[in-house]
Image 1 (tube, rainbow, N blue to C red):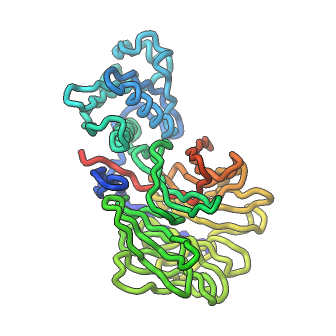
Image 2: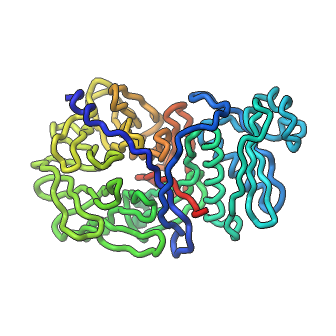
Image 3: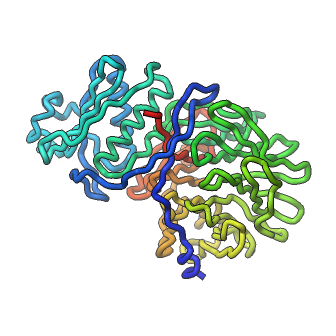
Length: 443
């Protein structure tokens, strides 16, 4: 079973996604596609090691904020050790490369606010004792605004690409749902990748998922009358119903990588099954699985859109399965060899196509686990508290997930390579997070 499964494992395309900010009622976003070159510039960077990096304090209006945001972004990438400028005797003297070298600094990031309002960023390579890259970046006029912060995240990501050959993920956002509590309905929110700018997007809704362009969100509404799949355009704020039935409950939608198809779960007297329909609503939902009283739910597309991973209890125990995009050729992915025969759910296929993350009840803990599709190796990446709903970041290295380790359900981020974890704090219970594609301003 597994060899045939692996032979069909997809390769991720080299394309990534970006979104542009524009003026909008809810959040300014428009679509733009970029391609990462995937090559470094010959700088000192070794995969698996953290480079020492210093961000020189930026002078001028909001210079402290600019310095703090870029420093935090590079820290959260988990590829660098950000060295405080205070440890360097005269950090403004960036040409004193021997001094920086003694302090373990590999790169120096130097930003200067220009009279035009743009930010000039210069990258120094200490080992080469020279400037290796520089660029002038425009910043939105409304300093401190969400679009201004998003532009700075994009600068951080480009600096990361200069050094590592891979664009960062700071310029992305996370959608999530608030928890039902105190008579309050659940609703969809978004937050920047660093935890700033929490914004409510919908009056109600759960289980949000991004469209590949980042322009919109699909989600399901639970109002006690009719559970339906909805779409919200983040530029115009317009909402529309994608699927609704007076007889059935629809939930847990996902969007195909080409943005044309929505797959979701529908509960009926015959069980819970996966259904597919065009996102433009041009035809009715088409049934993909036949549970015959069992549950098939929580689908996620492979990066090329040819396959699906989903949860199913078709054998009596909830496990993770992979099938073709039309629901055929379903095969068991998760097994019982790496834990108790418990409950495995919420799978998400990584953007690079190499791994699937899911939640697994192992013993008395609900863990976040990843399985490598090449060799079937399994890794536990979150074990403290009860952990659910993993969603991959665009770099296929970070996961966002729900955990109650802080005594209330909250959104957390983990680096699957190092295990480093951080919390995206909200003042209310939050869950069912989904990481956006990379977003970008139209430079």
